[in-house]
Structure formats: C-alpha cells, structure tokens
Image 1 (cartoon, helix red, strand yellow):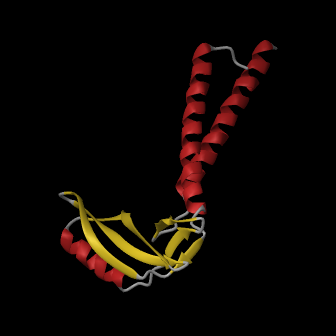
Image 2: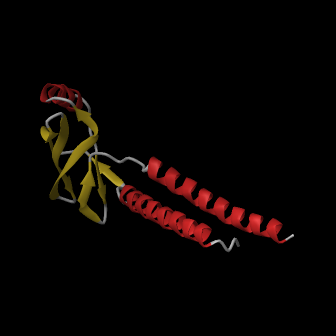
Length: 149
C-alpha cells in the first residue's frame, strides 16, 4: 500500500463517506422492505402543507383496518412540490382521482405509508462509492508495486 500520509487520509475520508452512504442506503432499504403487505384505505383525505412561501406539499391522511383493528397514518408527498396553493389544489384533484393502497409492516401495522419507493439512488450511490474505494485501494497497491521496481 502507498505509504503517503495524505493518500492514506484521503482513503480514510473516502471510507467514511462510503460507510455513511451505505448506512443511509441500508436504512432506506430496510424501511422499504418492511412494507410487505398492502390494503385499501378506509378513509383518505388530502391536504396542503406549506413548507415555504414558494413550496407547497400535499399530505395524505388515511386510516385502514388490519385484523379488525384500525390504524391511521400520514404520508407527505415531498417529491412533488408545488409553487403555489392553487397548483397544489389541482394536484389534490389528480391524487383524489387515483386509487391508493396503504403499504404496511405486517408485524407492526402502525408503520405504514401510501408510497413504497425503492431507494434506487441511494443504493446505486453506495455501490459506486464502494467501487471507487476499491479502485483507490487497488491504485495505491499498483503505484507501490511499480515504485519499488
């Protein structure tokens, strides 16, 4: 391995960033994977949440029943921000016309969501960072091998 202290500090930095991204990806995948069952909502009501003066989000408040027990939850649709409340109202009209499933954890139905999205960006980022880390490790060994000859 390359003995340069700056190079080793760089590798430690890349390792820390890679582990952080891997932790985020694993956490989001775990939350995705626990939503194994789906049911139809008993009630579903949409409302507008103002995040800032030019960003409005739509939140879905819902109730559902599992094994004759009622549960409630809310999902904030943060991936679809609107610039004003009028656009959010039109978004609510579009969302209300769709049929929705409530995804929940069978072992803990209190954990539920209207959306079940695979954390593709986080998983791909973690894989790319691991590949980058292994490349830099290989590069350190490669440079050392030719430097000693």
